[in-house]
Image (cartoon, rainbow, N blue to C red; front, side, top):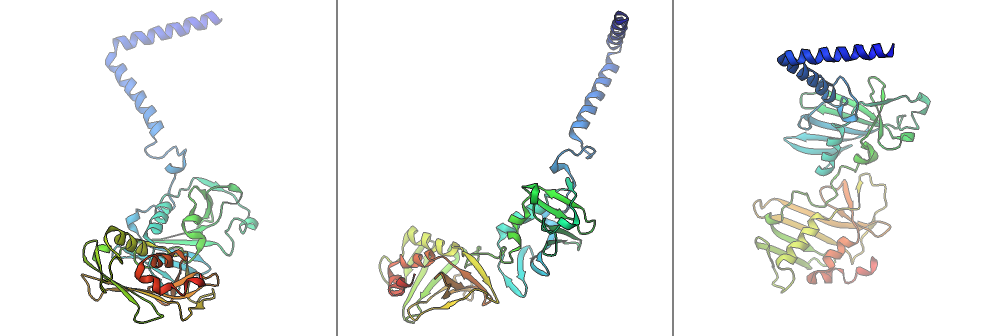
Length: 345
């Protein structure tokens, strides 16, 4: 019986080979069709076989350029990021501030990449455990054509890495790979506020004058003028106060120094007033726009003696590390500003 089956297979194979030898053109067509089917199954161009996270359907099927507004927060307390004339603006409650463009970019790239791949079942009684209860984080996206999409953001829970999210319209719960909580500061309303005292777009080349004043003595001033790119002079004619690349580097560090944290009005943290021996005010004027002025002012300290500065508005304060004041102490003309106040740090 076995020998008969082997003979049949041998006969079929011989017949097939003879057919392909006689019908070469037809055999070539069949072979290409076979290869085409294999390629189609592997590449899955129309998404019939979704076998990985990146090939699954997105939650937000938008291009980055189409997203115009983001709202994220808890229980009605939301941070609003809105793009106007190509520039992102930020609002927290009634407070307007400068946003951090890098954090916005990272968050945007994450939310357009999240996919509906791993659907999970969570008992409604356990939703609180996964951050999807009353205090859930709510995300709302609005496009330039007015289309709105929403998503509830929870935590990973027992699922380890990633984030658990819920579609509020379908109540479906999914596990996504992106750590959205990390990228939005876990709902901290100050997270997207820029931590630099001066706008990041501030260009050293456009600065004409930097005036530094001590509140201890109104006559204690240090004024630097940029008479040509990277060439600074002391208006009072004091030698070696700030010059060359060293001066440019020092100014760059002042402009780019970031706060340890942000305080928003109403201020819950206690602010200690400055003593009569403390005080610092920085005024920057620009060459192209004489009326364009930036001011920051040291107005107080925290209980831990961290200096607090005011920049854009009274409603936003910047808690700096003591090293920020040290940058001024290292300049010779400024040592008089701090000779008495150094003991307080």
